[in-house]
Image (tube, rainbow, N blue to C red; front, side, top):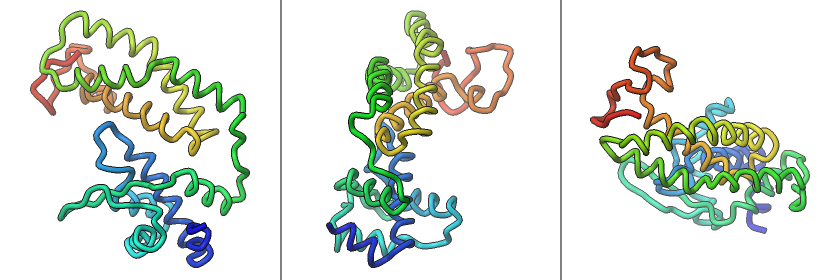
Length: 215
């Protein structure tokens, strides 16, 4: 296995870069991402681990020599990659950390997936994406958003907390979708939802970042 050769050759430094790739991919997975992860986020994750290391040399080797990642977008200011085989990458990281392989029949894992998809997350994500592009929402759209915010959003947040705690790798795609839903809701409600700012107009807080009526 190519990744086993990589981890055998580069040891802890190789493990840290692979771990950072997975975490950067989890953070970067948004509806309009240019790939699974970018250079800036990998470096930021390493820094958050207390590692002051430029991952560029090992990223280059992972792409050119090991075929684990491939460039999905490149410009003068940024570069994105796609993970070719996420499951194998996760397995190598898990093995280095001494964690057992997850049981695909784990009933709790299956339950969390069922609960998440029963909320129709992609339908919610599609709705929020469409509404975020509008300048003005009608009363029916505002009512629908409020219903989702009070009925579905608490369940989505509960899913994020349990999935991140127990199955961060196995449910990484679902976690990314759930976090995108939170991000878009914040964008629709406005700055007050992120800062805790009090505003006498409630949901009619003026959005400073765009010329669109808030919910």
